[in-house]
Length: 79
Image (cartoon, rainbow, N blue to C red; front, side, top):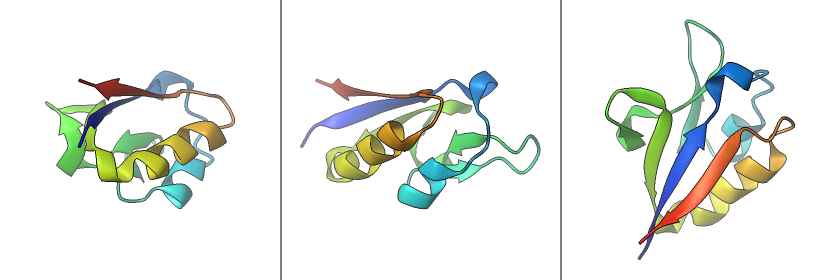
């Protein structure tokens, strides 16, 4: 099953929580700055704005990306 790279442009996040509501397995709100981030389990390194997610969560992450009102969540298939 493929994996997906998920990136969040956290500087542009408006904290409306659509991603967290639709896909809490992957997205959470940062307690310090109130912006969306990738949960630690899927984070790449220590970067809260970048993650690698298993294929079974494809629909979840794509729904979150599409629902983001400022279009700052990007999903790319990893070969």
